[in-house]
Length: 269
Length: 322
Ligand SMILES: Nc1ncnc2c1ncn2[C@@H]1O[C@H](COP(=O)(O)OP(=O)(O)OP(=O)(O)O)[C@@H](O)[C@H]1O
Ligand SMILES: [Mg+2]
Image (cartoon, rainbow over all chains, first blue to last red; front, top):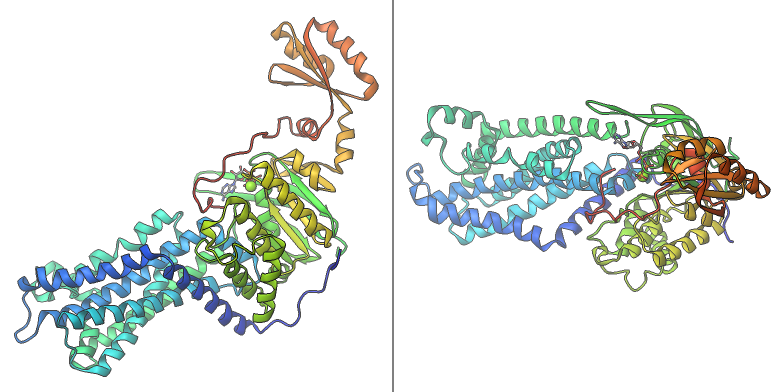
């Protein structure tokens, strides 16, 4: 009736502009999905709150702390690390869901910036981790957490988002390599438990048996927790911060590389 | 080359798994004219989805080339994506977004400006009768509404070529007929439509040309009328009294054995001679004659009957992987 074939559009924004708009649009979509899923919200928020209460009031009394240090002050900077990791890890399931549902196929058949589905996801999960950290800090304040240094809290918040960013790339790499969302669910989360429990997140490493203490010392999560504590409790940047930044770079680079490689391989039969 | 909307040259796709390899496309050749509605008709596993994935830049063929309006789907994938629209075998809208949000997101990804994509969304919601449901999450949509939204989304970029992979599989008859109307309306606007289907009726109802594919290659191509005439106009279904004679009977009349009967094809005036040959083999318990349909064309060229039943809709709300 009306239009016959028309020339291809020539008024497209530049590639880098497209990359940014597409990343933002897809991050917005992921966050909207989260916002509208009450179950996910409850799961992400109630679980850390329960951990806080459990460790603060049930186990906390039995855990030895250095003299003069209140356990809750060690706990909160540890729990935010655990939750930044959890938040980042959900990227693997989300990526895998989109692959299984065919949504990714649709994205890839559109003139979408090639990597925007991945960067959009990482951005969304980083921001979500930031939100979760704020919630936990607030709950912490209610149960007696007293940071020594205000600006350190802000710095810690940024650091935690950086940590989530690095881990999200690992999670994305898992998401693009596994065959189904069910596998992503287990592969994406299973490593978080040993990594966070065999670390200084909940208990001082010095109370662990030697072999475990050895693992906990080299465990990046211990560095993350210690770096966060340094910022909020002492307002201090120590070697843990150096290790943390190094690990973040390693996770982002290795995860990013594997993610992009897996993503590009999808067009192969 | 540019007079052809879609051109496929000797396309092979070999899926390589850990233990096995599967040749899904095996020297596929196709040429589709601009403005046509071209049906790719084939049974389960014929390679329809695989071809759509290659043509829409989702899968790089093992060998061979595909062009969309002269653009190579591998080397110029980005430009191809600018001019195509795709609606997959299962609707791929985002469940937690509303209908409008899905269209706005697609618009953004096509690089439309804020005003353009808002206007386009309003227009498409109206065209596909989704205005009332526009601001509801699509998880509340029925199967038919989801398909319509999927189709609307595939038109967001104002494509020149629209690929529809089994657009009506799993829909009830009424919804299917409504969707056929939508497809015709899109075709009327000059959009080339490549659609795959397992249903002969659908190809017959929508397409100006049909390619029948089986085991990854085109076995025959033509207009619906041409295809019907190549198999003969009359089909005789013969049932011998003695079932053991099925093989001999089939050979004598040059027909196929289908569910305990022999189906033989003939020109309008050849019916009596086929009957004479058949009776020479042995007595018949029943004889029916029918005018050839696309089913018979399908049978004649692929050696098996097309699936008649609608397969059940995908069990997961999200459809299935690939
Ligand atoms: N990712 C894959 N890995 C291995 N084999 C595959 C893959 N996808 C499809 N196949 C096989 O390739 C062949 C063609 O599949 P395809 O999905 O293209 O068929 P189809 O014509 O679309 O079938 P249907 O009508 O069931 O949708 C089938 O035998 C199928 O099992
Ligand atoms: Mg298919």
